[in-house]
Length: 547
Image 1 (cartoon, rainbow, N blue to C red):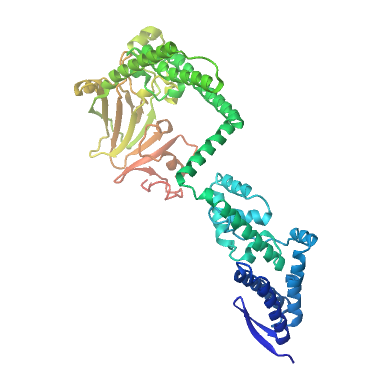
Image 2 (image 1 turned 180 degrees about the vertical axis):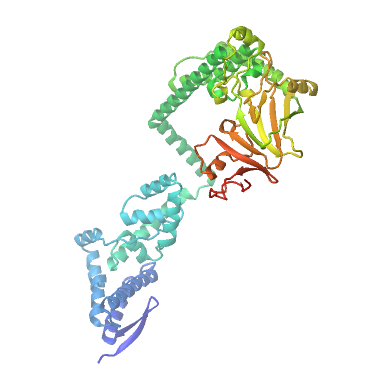
């Protein structure tokens, strides 16, 4: 039976035998005596006590016991080293050399002494024993991948502990946590303090001088970079600029030739070229080409001179190019203003067309594919000599002709009629310099609608005389049909219809391959006509079960 004593080390309570306590007490007395002359004697002895407490806790946990015995204390002292052995090692060069290369397994901590934000990068660098520059560069590069580097840094900041004590910093760098290790760590720390004190005079200089030296060093190193690898990047950047300018030059040259030769250019098919057909089109195209091409040419010449030191731009050449560009810009602005003046006012009028009613109340809406010719076209093609059985159709509704894009503004919508007879309300609109001129332009619009019994045929476009310019003509057709009237709509009209779920109606009737869809007029407007034997999808379209 042995007497035990309760002791407190680093806030941890241990039960220790009396003999073991005497050994530990004598050991710590020698340690405190040895380090008593050091400036940080209290800190270093506290760190040693903390390390001993960690080792005792490991012993109790590994051997599953509750009391520290003398054998445990001797084992800890053997690992930590005695003061006598330590003092002998200080006088032995070979022993000191051997100690210098003695390390143990590193632990991951955040380094508080070498940090930009939280010390995560420097802690990882210490763990893998590499330069912290590479870790910080890896995090910086990973920011380009959806900010993953920033998220990873925040996570590591939260889960990786900070190296607070000297023992933590020693474990982070893989230094052995014994008396020699603590002593060497203290000496390295004091050496670093002395180095900082030696640089204090430089760091304590006024901020203005430090800023001056920083700017001077920055431009000095920048000059070295530009004289070396920077030249390669500058050349590559110059080549990139030349390639972009060359591609743009080819594009505008092709566009210019196409506009002069054919009057339209496919990539610009949405533009109303008919707008400038009689307003000096060639002059406008030429001015626009010069306005776009001269800046590109200037960039090419400046790039060759600045990046490759080739070519020359004298003052007379530059002045001539500038004058030409200003003249072209003036011509373009002048004619653009003249054209824009044709769109100051808008006007519209409506016309009503009565439709012959059908007894069964069913109407078939189709696209009119007949080709309409002007008087000049009829004379040019000698239409009168053709046989009466010849039928000329128009495939323009396939939207492959760019000449008439500005005349495709035909819209069809549907309403419930207040009377038993279906009617069509055609609302024409156009623009002009004045309201009277806009109204006159709207009245000049030609549109062809025909009825053959129950078949209603709508043309896909508007028509104008050959010498007429485009005035933003537009036509809204409102087909008013009585309640319970049925409309069988052809698929070719889909681009002209408004507020009609054509394909949804075919899907709900299980007729995806059909070219028509049937609708019925209800109190809530035009709805898809659904056969009662078909299971409908209520979320797809509005359903009316009227037969």
